[in-house]
Length: 399
Image (tube, rainbow, N blue to C red; front, top):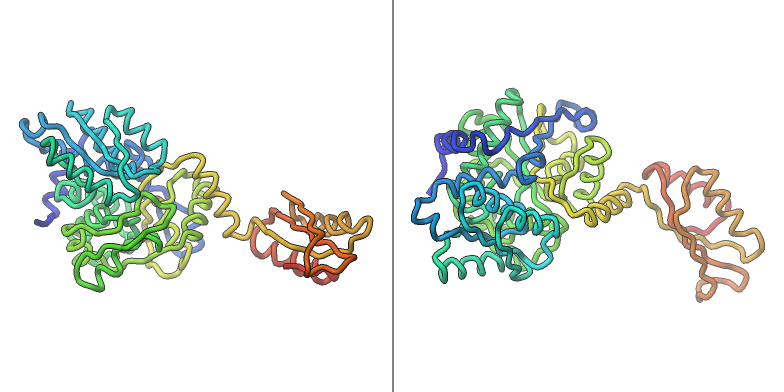
């Protein structure tokens, strides 16, 4: 069981009029950081908000009439769910989707909006997949795996064909990676036509199943996962995708939660792009080590289905990671005007005060001292360091 370039080309023909050719946006700010041309492949602007619509439609469109009568079932944290639901709706097929508990509300609502029935099952995607398989056995519904099927991989690989057409001289392609369907498809397409292009998969460090699996020579399940990037939180590679990644992908990198939040914030501020944390993984890798990748480079934005509440939290997390939020404990004399003088120094340094809290009872304080907790907004790490230096020069004890 494998996927060829011919399979991907055939999938592209099948997707004509269904999936869109997503934009390739030049990124001047990333190019400046990397020292060479960088472009963003905007799969966050694909139908249903992610690349998943490509593979799901190809898989379901190739079902026989008898299989379509039985309906389809899928397991997904949200993006594959929407792809399956849309494809089923377009083809007039009944769809049931199992989601892990805590799946983002917008993804659940969008899936229902496409006409699918949603059932919550388990904490992780693997738990939902077990439930979906059980449902398929009990009802006869056709399981639409989120990544480990030739039609799924072929459908996702159509994005690779577009990358080569949009950036013909590309040297490096970075792809957010969970189960590996998108990475496998893109790698097969690109390596078949341009074997010298470097293809790099990027995983969240808290849900990185591929490094250990590749080291072991077989898919190895993670014992646990913890990441904000639910779209790539997959604890076990598939047999098909593992083999394709092993044979066609040059490197797997991991990025931290701080890397992801910084990248998401940068995409909002600099690229005016709304992406989910998983969708920012490739950019996170570029920001973490900009000079590592030969240019022209393409970073795939794999999805944009983010809960607004989560987006707000991630942006705040990204601002903190970038040094733009600063939390300080400053010891000042417990005398009239002591706090005003401290705040005057903060204001003179150009920082914005978000919160002030006094603490007078502490074994570390003298009787005539008070500790002030400040939450500040700064212009970034260099500005924060200048503020700290200013306060210490004026005799304040700062933690």
